[in-house]
Length: 230
Image (cartoon, rainbow, N blue to C red):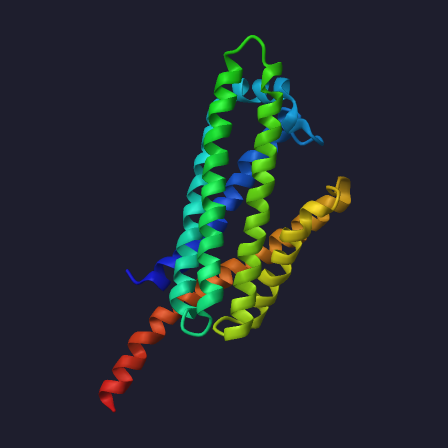
């Protein structure tokens, strides 16, 4: 299977996984009060959530793990598509995506081990520093993901290898992701609206990107046949 075709399928699959994670995580967080500000830093709430529904945590973690792998495949497909016109940007994109994937997987593994240990420990207060460290790791992963989106958008706009809508969406989302840690967390209805709008633009752009990568594979054989006929 060609890399761009694999990347196209991976882009579409990543959105399907994202929807599945949201469908699992949102009711779970509401049920155990983890949707409240800084609730993830409360050892009692985290331990209770894992003890109450360990398979839910495992399912969401596995889907997130697969999503990070699909993300790497998309970036490799884009590298193949745009490396000739933007070699340095694409190398930086691959490096940033690799770091983001590594941080995501590390955070998943650490989180699972931490929650499993907390569920069987009598004194869970000692896990508070660990949860703070894990929160910082998650913030770092999100920041690097912002750089991935920013570099992707910049490369798409400079090479014109992708529709400009996709390039601008990823560029803007990337800038917001990179500087997001400098702003206080949005709460309430405002934060929810911003998250929904950003998520919708990201989902539409990623699915469109997947379609573009798949169509490029369909167009290549047609050009080859035309050249042979000529």
